[in-house]
Length: 446
Image (cartoon, rainbow, N blue to C red; front, side):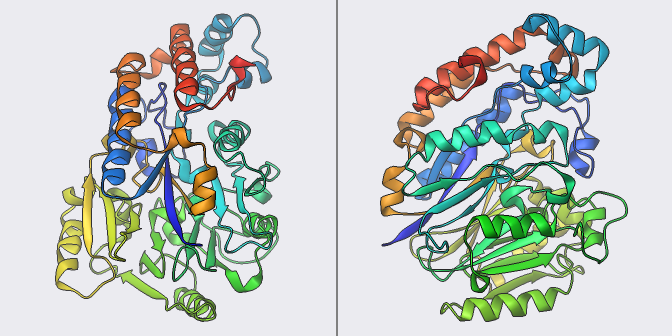
């Protein structure tokens, strides 16, 4: 049965703000306390989805999570009605209110790791929501994420949605941001590439400046849960030096699609051994692996981090040509722009470059690849997906109007103390669940 890759992008939530919560994410920390524009952020993401859908790529939508999370604030001891909880948290622990209000679930590359049915022993698509144990504002996401996934991929005969791994640093799991799948064709058996930053129990070098969020133990656990055999699994360690340079996830230094890996020269430990293993295992499935490696002499790691060149989407058109989707910042970095311009004069697997304005997301450290969760689906599985989440003209118009109705033009850190923001968010999400036919996926509806 033929299959294709669908990208499910997260809708940016109404509480999008710049709280600088993510240590190790250079953009997030450098824009801390600046004023955000939630409406613009949501529209930028929505327009990316629509443009890619118009170009013929399969595009779905994932809803925001309920924020601020009153559950988190109550779990840490704040009591009273919801307005009182927010007011007291703002006075006594504004950092916890900021964590409870983060719209970070917009970066659905961290929502889960996904293995297609062609790779798994039971022939189902497997999802494991990421525990995101390294950061409080993200560690609270996985239960809500699982409810959303269950509402969209509800057919248990075709989809298996696991619970997140235990939320301990030893099993720190950051989802698809550290996972790539290679295959000759999407519907054929492929090789799943797990990248980790450190091992909790093994030896090896570790970053010294910033934390490594993904562990080897977590990657192995997800592979076991997804019933992946050794011949479809490759594990590699991310370079500790690039983590210390601000590459907090593998998708900031590498992106893959079909049989192509587009990455920096310094992405992995023992990089050529990684290539050799990918080459050998893909060859067993009749595929030829290609590494398009960008040398430090042309694009430095610092250039890659500031431009998010590798936090791009590498997509296949129906005719097999590949499109690289990059943020506008790649055009504003002279070295990166020169590299992209030179692609047309070289023999590479990339045939076209598309540029998107995602400024609001980029200021918080999330580019095109952060905003999407990749899900390979065959025809029967596509038919089993909640049909209301597929992007088309009608859904775009509804969501565009929904954003205009419910989102603020400005949101500063001080605005998180406004209890009306909770009411606005709940009203918006209540309407969205009806629009997308998702049922009661939010706590406030239960």
